[in-house]
Length: 206
Image (tube, rainbow, N blue to C red):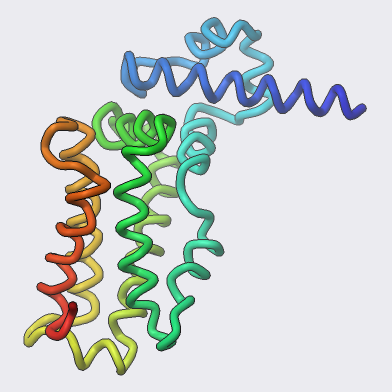
């Protein structure tokens, strides 16, 4: 039984790896489950055994490189002052640096940001992705809305605007670097760029 479970998990891993390669090469919309099955050396039935449809497969692929919602929430509220601001900064810095350090993250985020059209076939995956984004923004807004942090926001900047500004910058940095790796160094320049944003949001950020 253990060997059967191990074989099943290995098959699932092989299918996901083939999906990464083909999505990156052909784009998500132009890659079918039949293409993935052939590349992985398995039957179409084996693909459907592990994944209900392409949207399910795409969602599981994304889940390999991003924090689960519970872990994400935990990371953002852990802070000596209790407001999570430093944890949020650290998470952003680590996220940008991680793209340069982890080849799988680079492939999957390149697929998400540059090789994916959310067609009707991927409606479920799109909804799950949007839910994840909205949860991240809501967690950021919660941090910026803490009394100790909100009073430090620059004039006119609300917690909601701060959260959306931060998300937009991080996605922009990821998208630009994945398009052209020569634009900046994620490890060296990333922290400086993120510090610049925090200084623009927080009046006394240092």
